[in-house]
Amino acid sequence: MFFAVITLFPEMFEAITAYGISGRAAKRELIQLHCINPRDFAEGNYRRVDERPFGGGPGMVMMAEPLAQAIQHAKQLAKQAGCTDVPVVYMSPQGQTLHETAVQNFVSYDGLIVLCGRYEGVDERLIQRYVDQEWSIGDYVLSGGELPAMVLLDSIIRKLPNAMSDEQSAVQDSFVDGLLDCPQYTKPDLFEGLAVPEVLKSGHHANIEKWRFLQRYQRTMQRRPELVEQVELSQQQKKWLKD
Image (cartoon, rainbow, N blue to C red):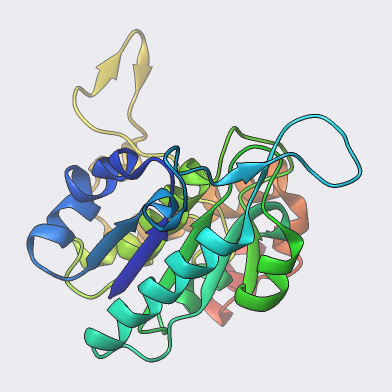
């Protein structure tokens, strides 16, 4: 999958290409990640990409022209890679809140061009002309779009075929079927007086499956009850709830 990130801090994205699942995906060439610095397209000796906002006010605003050229360059790279369905995504606190269904939809694209804002944001005209989608990772403000972009990329990459060594793990993640994940345990059997539930050591797969579902359902009811309303339960799961 093709990714191009427009960022003033390309070195931050070594966290994606050098570590963990995303790092392994990069080594296996399951993804291409290009980091494009808009300063490379800025004019003048100082390569400025920001200016004071019209109308006054605090802070600076990223200029449209360098960002537009950076995006155009990213689109050219995507074309050279044979990728045509590559929307431009702007990470912004004003965007839709990222969720599991959106992540699954992103996987169907050939790639993404992700714009990371800084300062007070970017010139609105750039958004109007070049941005296809705006997404947020939550109702709070960060110093820039790099961390949200990394969240977005990581959430997508781990869903790509062959990105994870245990494909079943992704299927059982929280939110995949609308419920939170169940509690997890490993050795030792006893930790500071707390024991592993006996059912998990029983070897009875049907009982373990039932226990895990009930734990997931109860945990979701307690912590995120609004999610339960959207969940489609199987006949077996409905029976377990009645038992």
